[in-house]
Length: 548
Image (tube, rainbow, N blue to C red; front, side):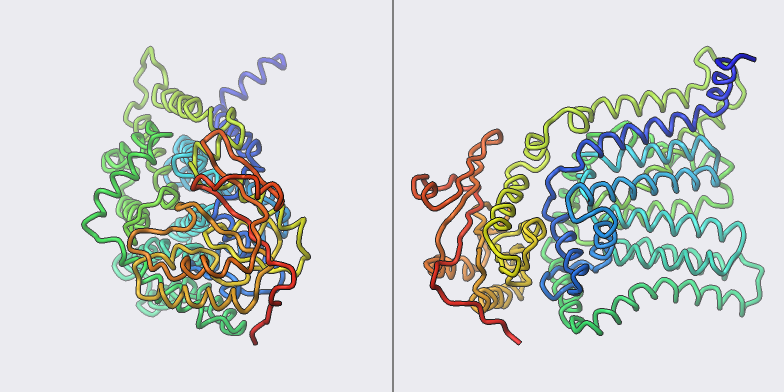
């Protein structure tokens, strides 16, 4: 047999592996092209908090937010390995999403067959990079998906061959997913309930062993959060952690009236599925094929429970933000695998001029999906792509502001931002003068808003930051008609202590005017309403006074 014949036979035998490799490689190339894409504000928050952790500063000391700190720790690990840059963060994200895809391949292969695994892996890889879900950014829901999938793999392994290690590790992984973002608690709750029901109603083990197994699983789930609380308590920030992640988070979740939920969901889901609508339709078909495919006989309820929990994990606060849907992608990908594998199973050995039509039809769906996303993944330059995906959000402008601050201040200088651009702190490598790295919470109609504004004002007046960035951009400031005006009224008077030394003004989607230096600023007319204004403390002004 000639070498070409050997290669041809190998390709025919392992074409599914080659297909998976090619799809993962195409998505990797897309992510590699965009390694230096500007950080969005969520990434900026995680990166800044991770940067502080690497400096020995715990979460909730210089950066407040309602999220659990798991993603902060994950970012710290990524930046320790690959550098404190957007490229390092995005390279870590590439490895994370690829690992998630490969775990889904393993799981789909174990549950059904190799085709199901390949479809699950490739569907996830493509959808996880979807611009309609902001999947190119390192959102917390990517990390949730990774740990949920890892927990699911070990849960499946335990179902087939019991092992105390697999049991404890599965629970710990689901618990870690909750640390990444609280939305994952619904999936973790499903995992615990599913395991307990299986043990108490289906297992033939003794009652004592069943009870111990459930206790171990529950304890292992709670261990990550318990260790996190001990760490934060020892660091002296547990009270702030509790306030932001429980007290304020409860108020935040109650802001959106439930009657608006259906409308918001419809608006979000119709946008989310635009990039990969054919893959979403395949997943919808899986909800039918799961009932018809006899191979699901012993795991149908378990799998559909996971799908339901994944769907509900998108919904807790009724905001339905685009990146929330990333947490449901492992379930969506496995459903797509169930569809293609189920159709092949149903078609059986029947001959057809179309050959293995479920498989090549899926390959065509993937090709069409990649082609429809080609402009974003392979063509648009990064500034144009930032405008396409984020509109007037000042992502590229934040990099310019951060560079200016870094070059015009000592490393010990403090910075405050009257807006919501925490990526500036990270990129400038400067500490915030206040823990309020977002002004969104301060502008919301919630009972802590005025207290928060007064605390932020007190922080700035006490620490007298070298630079204050004023976001003349509603997408960044979060100002709304019912916002308390105290903070910005205070700024109108307090800014006399500062000099305007720079500005990035978004005039149009294709034109941002950058003005740096007091002489240039003096000759520039008023901003057009979507600007980041850089104010520097006047020489001879009051010096910062650190609080004990």
